[in-house]
Image (tube, helix red, strand yellow):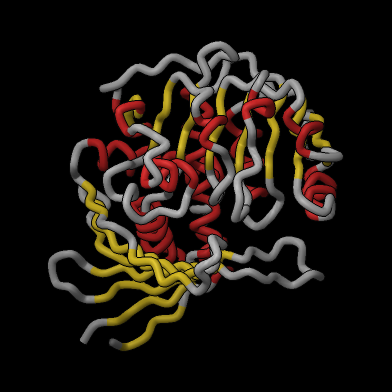
Length: 334
């Protein structure tokens, strides 16, 4: 007889795996394993609930992570369209992670994966910022203030502590004000709710797109001062804006190019982006196989984060191990 461990959101938080400094280490290790072909992903299965271009869908993402992580599993994530208007911290993205033993096939754990997903997304951005952003970055523009945005803010503060200003923009100018207020006084970096998109990107060295926009809003003029653009969200950027980049770095390409609703993959399927323009993967950079110069306003770099389930599984496996050591969770008979 075997047991399955259930970990709630609070249990996962107590393990500490979602602290940025912890998550970055786990994610960078997963990147290196993937680059060494010791981790496997397949095309996501997307159940789209609307056909109007909105990110309203459920996604099934199975994966295997080898090395000393050695875990199989599934990330099931539901992207809704509504959140509680009284709860500014609520994410419209809710996730569940299932872990199984790759040898016996027995289930090991089921856990709330919502914070894991947000934390690993932030950690991926942090890894990209540390390798691709200008060393003397002074201003970062964060587009979006939803459930993913707080981890993106944490990523900037972790990876670019010298940043003087972070301008946060969101439609409606409500969530961005709430987000910057929550962090005011916790850092020496100026946190500001931008009046509009132009205000946010004006003079920005780095732009992060982290919205659920069904239509792209970033135009070439928004990128004038930018050296690096990190694409985290959905359909953020126009084809004309993508044409401004000298280098394009991805977390993966083949597994996503036919299915993802993100801007870059849409443009590829429409014949408006040539995959030959892809410089390489962040995993190759982290492994030392690829050297990509940091972005400059004259040689701009785009980083596209499709989001790999190997990150969620790696973080979840560490949460499972720590939970066992700490006596957290509820054990259920299989």
